[in-house]
Length: 305
Image 1 (cartoon, helix red, strand yellow):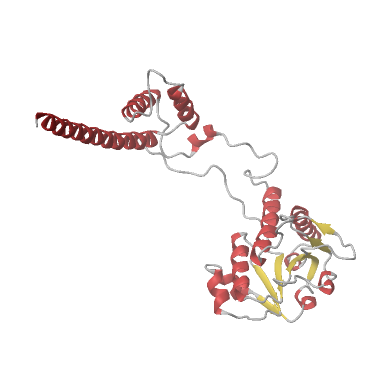
Image 2: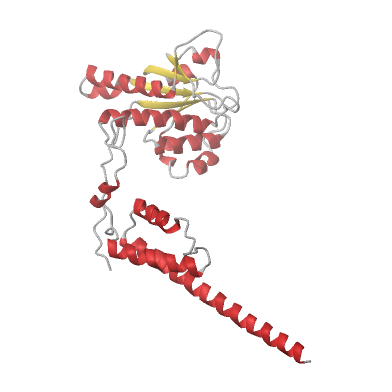
C-alpha cells in the first residue's frame, strides 16, 4: 500500500476587498431573481445588495432561491428611487443591453472591473481612518428583467457596461448578468492583490508541481510495465487487439498513460477493472464453448437418425 502524504494546496487564496461595491437592482419584477442575484453576489464575495422599488419583496421565493445566501438578503437595503440608492456612491455604472440614441461612455465587463478597482484604490489612498471605509462607494446598477434601465436612469450613471453576448441571443437572465460583471470585478481585485493563480504572468499548469500536494506517489516503472502487460492480454482476450496486426495500439496506449502519469492507487484501480473484465471474458468464452458443444451434440444426433 503506498504511503499517503498529507494533502495541501498548490496556492493560497487571497480575499479581495469588495466592501465598497454595491449591486443595485431596479424595479425587479420576480423575487426569484433577487434571490438568485444574492447567491451570485455571495459566490463572488460581494456582500452589498440594494433594491430600488422591487415589485414583490420581502418574499419567501427570494429566500428560497438565495439558498445559502440568505444573509445577503437580510442585509439588503430597499430604496424608493435610484437617486436615493446611489446618493453615497462616487461611481455609478449601469448595465445596458443596447445602444442608446445619445452616446455614453461604454465599457466592456473587463473595463468596468478595472474602473471599479481604480476607484477603490483612489478612495483608499485619499483618506485614512474611519472615513476611508465610507468613501469611494461604487454602484453596479441593473434594470428590469424585460426593459432594463430607462434612459433617465442610465443618465444617472457615469458609465454604461455592456456584456458582449451572442448577437443571435443576447438576452441574459438578471442574475447571470450580475454574475458576469461581478466575476470580472473579483478577478481584477485578485490580480491586483497578486493572487498567484491569476494574471497574464500566471504559470501554466505544471504536473511536476503535483508532488507538493498529491496524496499518493506516482506509479513507478515496474508498476507501469505490469499494467501494460495486463492491458495487452485483456485486449487480446477481448479480440480487440490482434498482436499479429497491432497497428501501433500498445505504443499509443503507452504514450497516453505516460502523458497522464497515473499514481499508484490509480494503477491499482485500473488493474482491478482489467481483472473484472478478464472474468467476464472468461465466462463469456466458457458459455460459448458450452453452447458450441451442445450444438455439436444435436448435430450428431440428427445425423444418426
